[in-house]
Length: 215
Image (tube, rainbow, N blue to C red):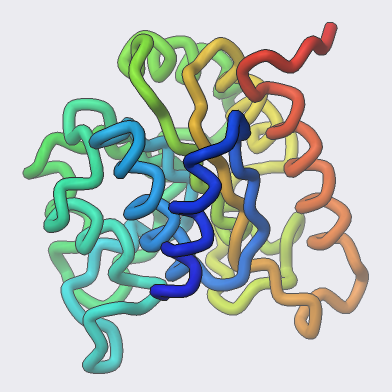
């Protein structure tokens, strides 16, 4: 964790926007710790099957299911500008969904995304994020396993590949200061479809970064 934080802190000295491929979702915490040293508390677009706001996971305070609770506790997030999309698993405690909502998060559960385009939702998200710094964290398990089976914690009833593209493309125009795509697990990706989708989503993220000219 400290190695990651130190590395990204060093990147703050350069005119660049980090685009990171994980790895489990734990990596987002040290990245946020580093980026907020430069930008202050940031808005967050978190796409995931899980809220990752557990207090503990298997007795550990730092784990892929606790990332955003720690981020809140450490003051890394602008709580008026946090949106979570695609959640459909209660995780390890009954109140996981409500914990973030009680602190100001907007929670868009997977069921609210079924059978519809997410382009209108992303217009609302852009308005909520405004001109402030925004971090995009995209967990591949937000997608239904039919699209992305190669992950450690798959959950049925998830987003489609088209909706994933709508979310990322809907971030165009935001003041993105970093993005990550996490939880791709090649050993579980027998067909290679998950890795192919992840690579395409990373490319789409690159295309919506501030200053990138893309028609």
